[in-house]
Every structure is written in structure tokens, then in C-alpha cells.
Length: 272
Image (tube, rainbow, N blue to C red):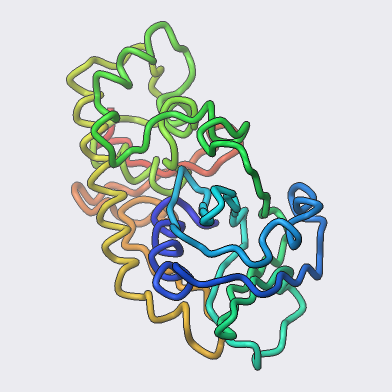
């Protein structure tokens, strides 16, 4: 599933190919995604110029010169890539944004859990955006922020940091990785962790996510190859997906359990 680093890489990958370009057509082959595609998407966007490509949480935001915004969520299997008009659409290529220079931004989603919505309201007021917590790589995200929100919370710390109301973009993979780096057991109650440990955890979340984004930067060329690869990258993971393999620190076997129906990986020796 695309997580924050993959979405950030996607935005970086498509940005130089579509910013300041004019939309000539929008082809919608499948309207039923996670939510129905905005009904008048084509009419809204024709003739508009893409001014910025940015990310909020796991959403790609394409802002136009008329202050409309296209909100794209990649869901579990979605991808965006740059092709030209000569490349035929595949079975799961659901939407094409075609520009006047014949550049095509193509949305592919095998499982159709992604979304493409458009809004004319300020993006900060949109229902998908307005209640989100701070970006994990911003100055607003600190250990103090986590510690204050966690007071009296009995939920596990892993579920707590995956809650987008507390901090955005810390998905399942990077939650496991950050907790391992911070030495915190994923089942610990969020409200019973000290400020000092939350300060360490916030620092580790920033490090883990930034390292993954830096890795992704080496694959930006994948957004413009003829095979249409999505441009995601092989993550260097310390615990996630490594059940029964030796811990990189103490050599104890990595353990796996489910927390809120999500696979969680940890070292019982290094994480307390």
C-alpha cells in the first residue's frame, strides 16, 4: 500500500511534467472508485492550468489557476504515472488527465480503493482534510504534541500514532519501524508513555519517513518509462515483514502480532 513516502515520491515525480500545463481533456473509464469520481470533473478542469502539486497526508493535491483542487488518493494499489497519448490504456487505467502538449497523467488502480475528487472550496476546509493532524515532518509535530494528546488514552501506542487526527501519514509499515527505532513496544498504552519517550518517538518518526523519502528520490525516472511502472521503491526495513528473522540489534527473533487487525512486527528484547 502506498504510504506517505511513496505519495511524496509520486508528487515529486509528476510535478515537473504537469505544472504550468493546461488540461485539454479528462477521460474517465471507471467512475466507481472508493467514492464516485466528482460528477463534473471534466467540465470543471477543461482549460485549467495546474499551478501546484503538493501532498497533505496521503493525498496528492493538484491545484489549478482558478483555485480548484483535484484530490487524489492512491488507496491500496493506486498509482500515477506520466505517459503520452500513444500509450494505450490498460485494464485498470481508470482516468487520464490529458494536457495540451499530449502529456498524460494516468491513474491506475487495480483494487479501486483510491479516489479522485475535485473541490472549489479552500482545501483546508474540505471534509477529508479539515480534521487531519499535523504533518510528521513539520515543526508542528513534536513529542510534546503526542504526549499531550495521549493523556488518559488506553489505546495502543501503535494505533495512536496511526490515527490521522493525531499525526498524518504514519501508516502500518512506518509505525512498526519508528517504534522499533524508539525502543517502544507497539502494545504499550499510549497514555502510559513518558514525555521523554514521546520526544524520542517523534524524532524517530521523522527520521524513518525522511529516509524513506530520500530512497524514493532515486526512482523518480520510473514515472516516465514506457512500461508505466508506478515509481515506488524497495524499502529498507528493520522489522516490518521480518517475522522470525534475527533482530539487527540483538539477534533475537522478530515477533509478529495483530494490532487493530494490522500486522505488527517488533523485537521483544529491544522494545519495552
